Image (cartoon, one colour):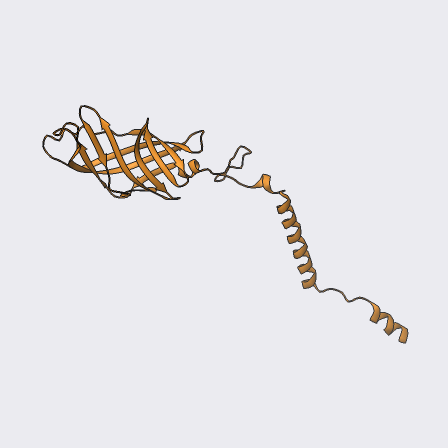
Amino acid sequence: MKSLATASAKQPKQMSKLQTAAIVIIAFTVTIATFYYLGIFDDFQVIDGGDSTPEATPLTAARNLEGTWKTTFPVKFYIKTDFETFGELEDVGSENRTMTWIITATNDENTVNVEVYFTVSDRQLVSDSGYTPDVSPMFLTGTISGTRLTLKTGDRTICECNFTTDIITGTWSDYWSMVYEQEVYTATNSLILTRQ
């Protein structure tokens, strides 16, 4: 009888179900973490908004800007010409513009194509202003440097912008010569477009 009691005292205690579950969870977590750090899951990551093909590439500055952007309210554009002064630009009026920009990426991650559409309202010009309006759409090239976007046509810079994920803020200053020299411009950072 004594030997039976001694034998039962030497047997290991069984683990509870809770202890077993905790050990399994810890082992599973350690295994997944090891696989993660070894890079085993890299081929399964979704990159670029749900495209899981092997050709998918990480987002670049140009891809961050791709899409349609619009002004939420009309923006005042000021107008200068040299119609009366022959060589010296002077203010001759203003107009409001509502703008839509369609931005597409190019092969260069720091360059985008920008289609600029606008409608004009409340144009107010002095008589004999000589203003020959620019046209919509305009097809511009955008150069990206950090969070800065510069819009050009040829060598002519038209707009300097800063951007975040959902907002582009810019200063427009477009100067050209047709029959007369003219410039259309905004106040500093008054051009605000939001992602649609």
